Image (cartoon, rainbow, N blue to C red; front, side, top):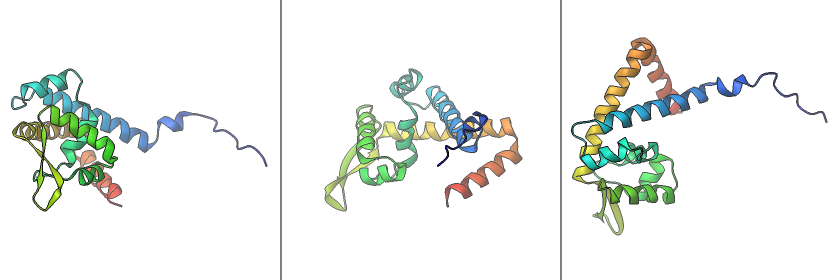
Length: 160
């Protein structure tokens, strides 16, 4: 059996779509957090946490996936593609920050429902405004046509 020949160049490892998607998501999330840190409606304590780098992309999972009417931890973890334990740790931290609370589930007395607090809803509004601004900046950077094709392509690819 012969040994496989190593690629003649290593550039392929840093020039494929997955690499660019990861970098783009990291840039987008960082911009969203920077915008949130300065949003007028952002609770001051959370704005300070964001500005000091205490809130990261992992915390955005809760923002993206927690239903406004509330979610069970298992649903939230599944929606975010995380383990229940990892999501539980994030929820505990966000609960300490006053973003979310645990409440009785009206459909199952054994279960707890996670939901946004008023502080968390203010966070969610700041997140929405920041995402809208970051998307606008992305469109300005690459042009409307490219941004539209990118959006359509990514939606099609991710829904398969």
